[in-house]
Length: 509
Image (cartoon, rainbow, N blue to C red):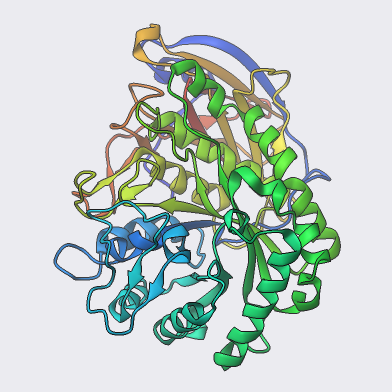
């Protein structure tokens, strides 16, 4: 946990510092549990905040324009994982790779450089040996490495895997992923998937001996909008049970949907209730099945984004979407998701940063990135954090949410979110007062770190977390933008924290 310069202040004077034109919207009282509640999560992996790179973009995220290791990308990833003490886990894969081939004589890393082309969703990419040099530019990281699976001939898969493993090394392999979104394959059925997965799994172990006697394979990687078509239970009952000892992780992809284009749609898009409904209907049954039948196999979202295929006019990559990413990840922790890998595509608006100049624009840190240091500080170091959603009272709109981080059964941090949509055109910025009741008797003060932006929900610039910003000009390291972290006095085991509309606050006890 990083602590920042802050100002001591009593709960009665915080209101003046919320914002100059702020008006109170609601009061919410949170009766804090004395110890971790019975529904508290398992311990959160310090490597929970992961990143994913679409196959064709990975090279451009790994090298700068001069051909050197991309320190801008490295620093952004390290600024997140250094806060938790976790290992950077990077998923490299996607449709362009699953449809692609490896050409050992090709001099270029890829025939469709990501600076000029979007991912090739039909014909795929051809990669050469130099593509795998990109894996060497991430010291300390481990990889979720995809090999092609779609093609009925596995010769491309073997060559791809052998070349990749020569560069990655078994010691840096987190999981070996077979294919991407197989429910789109022309030959797909659950039983056929399980049959072909086992065949490729067995062949790869024969050709790459270092894979033997290891729990290292990754299965499913189902598309977000078709998760029901490849259920975990069905895949295992159709055959994956036979090789469960080799499977380390079951993966699905998650996108909130095809992007919103109006302000009202955006408000509905980021609601906590929408996320809960999506998770409950599509994913939680798979998590529960693994927990009951294969507790040693983790569940992860290895390709995640706010929006997929929204098209022209989509409202994305702004403060509202960054806050959605905060809520989504915190909720995932409560239901047993082991990790969330955030998708990066150079020629896309869903990414957290654009690593080099491209036809999409100059290198830049996008608003979505600001969710990650917040999440990392909530997890903190030590590997002991467990998470539970806290009761904020009736809120049928799904805009006020709170989570508690518990260490050794004791409350250590609280995340408060106000997803109520606000832009300057709405007039004075409202806020909600969260009264934190029954704080530990030993707690005399709490620290409050804000994630917000002066211009509200649609802000693409001016975002800060704990007064810090991340930019290309700072080469992906944090720099001080403002001093807005506060120290609040606890009076009578209570403290009141005001959270502006379209903002979040991390409270540290």
